[in-house]
Length: 123
Image (spheres, rainbow, N blue to C red):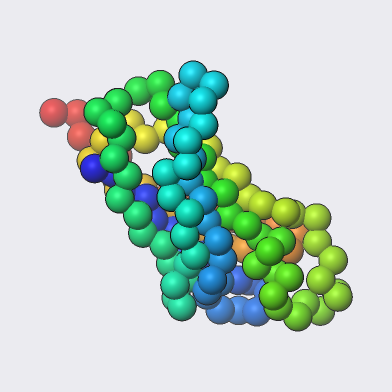
């Protein structure tokens, strides 16, 4: 099974984005199915195992980070004005047993994301 994880960091407050809601959807031929719906732990981390149903291609996964809801629970310097409701990442998971770690630096008006997993083996 594949592992999807993230470490969400709040660049305004300067700490972990604990409690941010993250959803994952499986998108296949126009159909969308919820895979998981979690909140980040006290360290701003999520880690979920995903059963890819034996599929190795043609399936897209979507991670949704609920930024506006997260910041509505925090006092911001500019009275909470923000335009980002959610951050949506669409992913291919080429290795059914791979590790897909996607850290995010989050702010009300921007974000930065990168992948720090491992490339599939060519054996």
